[in-house]
Length: 438
Image 1 (cartoon, rainbow, N blue to C red):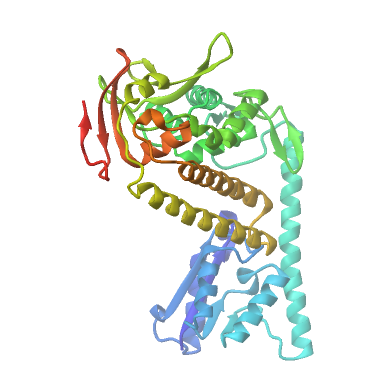
Image 2: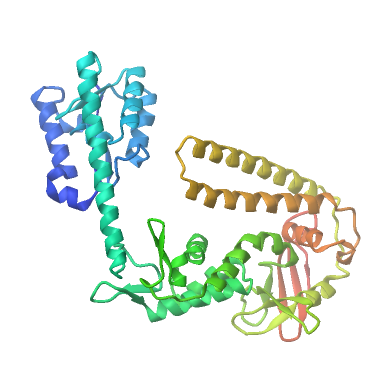
């Protein structure tokens, strides 16, 4: 007989109160050995959800267990009690139907579910309702306690502090001066139009260690806590954490994140320009002149010098190019495949939301990312589709076409930011060859 053991504990306090993972495991082994179901504990395959609530079946080990049930890799599942498996009536009923469908038995040592007779179905349903009631009452008590703490003017949440904050001896949230300064700089860079990769790179340089990722920077920029406001069960409090930035700054930073993919085609030489003096990759920047005209330029963070995009374009104006080699057609088709993939991901995400697998908040976050990638792929396809055979770089009609050419054919361009000159071009291995212009 193939046996699976399911173990779960939701909190450290619960473990300390006597329902620890080790305790559950020991009791299950003793029970199986007493009934001579096993001769050695290695015969049991364990599925362990340590620190997961039973309010739903969306738990790592439970998902793995369900997958193995569907592939008929077990005959019996043993758990300490029903509340270890689920505290939701509908989830438990669905799981029981699945077990019946695949011929798998469930044995809960202290309150085993049974649906064979009317009385057993009634008692099992009452037990499951009791477990769900206990979970919901615990949730309500926790919510009331958190609200009471917030109303008293104290920070109500535990766990690690967000970057930029720390707790004082009284448990109140205060600023971490060094980290708060970097958080402010991150928002300032986002407001100025820095690309996400550039913000990550600068933030990690400031910290002298790799602790920031694009995802983490995005979460920082979207976190309202940095404006001094936190939401506790639908009510906003603006006196529990000190503000690092203003609401206007956060709105501007978030707006730049949403529209960045729409603006990115303006920068033709993103991640391509290299400073001759220090070897740094130049950062995309912009500024407005006296007549409200926007100027795009590339900035060396080490030398603190810059070169205009128009200067680089002028240097490359007579560069001979060939767009009829099939490279653009291949890129166009590849972008079409990416578009189809993203449409599929969007459709599956909406289905998961309708099925209740994904929350509204998570769906909105993931959907925004998919829509941005989809918009970017469509825009690049449009730029490539409009290309015609050109002779030199200056024959391209717009920035989108120039950017598409640079992304496909140019690996790096070495520039002198002080003299405002292009020194050399290194091409990717393509129809253009690996020649260099010096």
